[in-house]
Length: 178
Image (cartoon, rainbow, N blue to C red; front, side, top):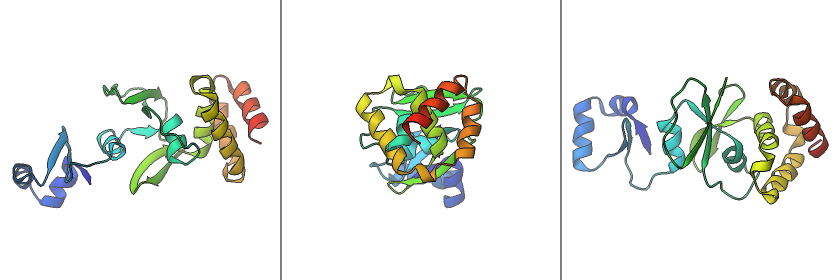
């Protein structure tokens, strides 16, 4: 399991005990403020813990929701425009006004992560249609059709209305999914 410094301090009681566990080898420091009790940790859990100001989006959200079978090459995350750029080559970061609007907490492989809601995930798929291979796109669209009844159309319209190319996005969604 991965912990941040404050969680460890609550769990162990003091900074001294954290240092002692690090020295004993029962804790491993992954990066500043992030620790694990196992050398075999999930990179998804690490990203969720290390970058709490982010939300998984686009291909990551599609994969974690089970809408595509192929894991993405990168971890796609969104964060608020004012946040610092993440300098990790495995992470593709986008900056948006309100990344925590329309976010679900999902459990993926036993790890709780923040992921865009179905509606925002669908919009990000349509917006980035030309950036992914067609087989992945068609698989995601096919799976969205299968769960069409779970998509909140009012919420979808609200998120579409905030997009620059709202007319094109709306037309594409209604032609390809509904």
